Length: 289
Ligand code: G4P
Image (cartoon, rainbow, N blue to C red; front, top):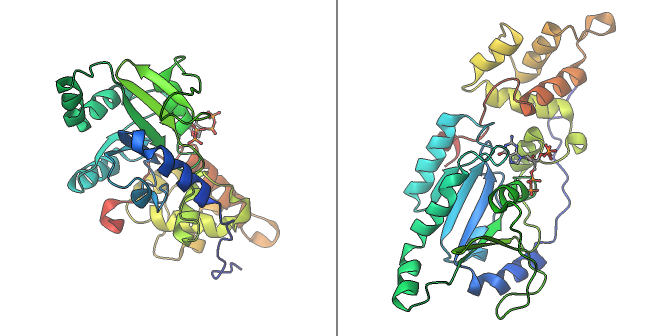
């Protein structure tokens, strides 16, 4: 029997130090590049970021787009555009989409570049801070785009010693997040979505409950993919029953004819994370924004 009242217990995280460090460096930053997981563009964000970065130009990198639903990714890009934010789809594992990053930054900051030019400050690089919660792919992004041109921590005016700077080219420098930005752990849905994608360990959760949540999401638009993977399923029953059907299809039957739902849940989550079920986005614009 599954206890539906179970909530996820998260450790609170210490955001204050990170906020202070970001605020300190903000005056010398020209723009913020926020990396999010394209499968969960809402849950993989820090809820306070908007307030922390004030009015800095902001671009969003919808990373892991190789695992997300391309239609949903496009909808998110259009949504952000309607909010005045440029978003680009990237895959930092293969590097796909990254070629547009530099141009996007230069377009976003074209007024600044023009004013540098007018003031004769032609060699002054743009400084972009890369932010994102753990596991969204920040390191993969920086490694891919910076290659081996990693700059050492420098002590020069306005640049705090110990911050991780990367020189991309003569016009662009990146700063890795000074500290850790946490997701909105206190929100149960956020925790579940992060656990389903594997961004946080699922051991702290009821694995069957998590698989049921995944089934509920997939049953609303991705039924065909589930059926293609596991065979005919009856979605008119509750998600626990659908989990049982999936377990039965895979022969996960224990003594007495019951289904080993824990094993079925682990298998389902594993197959979702390894993209065996398909390209699936858990958070859609139409349901959330
Ligand atoms: P972080 O700095 O934000 O914490 O994230 P990091 O780059 O360490 O990436 C977290 C995981 O996500 C890594 O997998 C990384 O390979 C994977 N990843 C990052 N970007 C992409 C992407 O665009 N597509 C896909 N499919 N995966 C991506 P890992 O399993 O922790 O390590 P490994 O697989 O690299 O060994």
